[in-house]
Length: 385
Ligand code: PLP
Image (cartoon, rainbow, N blue to C red; front, top):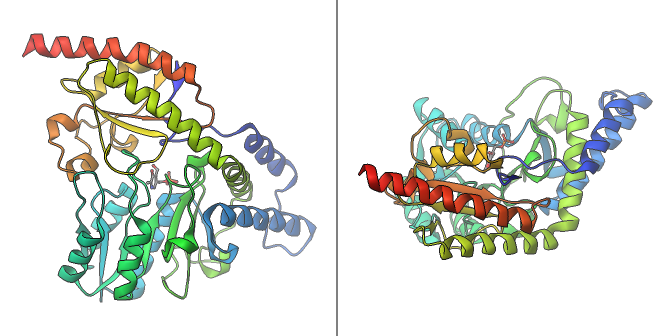
């Protein structure tokens, strides 16, 4: 078997595990305390902040640590809405992660003006579509469009979208959770005013993330009130060990960025070519768009993805159908529906995502297991039709 679900969560690197354990043993002070224990914890926290900033291409001052990217996305969207008092529209992409889309839906239910910008058939928000939405829903106060999609790996033209926003004087927030560590992400160069990151997608611990924000371009109300932690941006004693693990993972991801990209691209091409050669009628979602090197979203005709997922699990292979958060429900993925894929096709979607520890042998073994299982399900569908 093999773990091929890195977009759901990535296994922590041994160096991350070791340093988190060391921190819990020796670095457990409260970073706000003035004594030695506190100062040593503070120093670990600030080292992690520098490492995350280096991976993200921002200044350490712009990084506030959060309890994951779901919190970072909630914080920036709700913080904007509360600060703005509903004067201007919040515009979000049609294929955003639920932590953006459901937050927008909640705000709309509370009376805040919210709108969606559509994607094209490859899942991209084009600069023209953004311009059209800005004209239709103005005045817009914040735009949120992700860097890379978690289900399809499709990249958004973030810098071009930021340039359109800049013409209107509107800040852009981008959820870069899936892009960070898999491809170069440069906050300063992108033109975005805010960006969300998650530690566990790059091999750090779960429940840790960051909201990166240029406070001059995007003022927002704090999400959590209390002590003055994180420069008044996010109250609560910091998760020092978790944040330290985030920093170690960010450092490793930065060192490995180029090699990891080439490695993942090789595995992905082998997987997709192998499946295309198998004559099972596979379609690769977002094939014509720029994509993350590690992600394949595969549409398999006459296959119920949930059944295939369970069969693969019995054979020891971990993959995902649609989004991990939506599995368990048989609803087709809203991301695929937003791309105009019909729901019967969307029900046969399988997401395979690799990472630093995935080997070529694992991909071969996966193909050898997957192809006969797909054929069996397709035969059964044909016979019962
Ligand atoms: N945004 C994207 C694109 C994701 O893929 C995820 C994780 O599934 C999140 C946000 C949420 O991150 P977290 O698990 O840290 O809350």
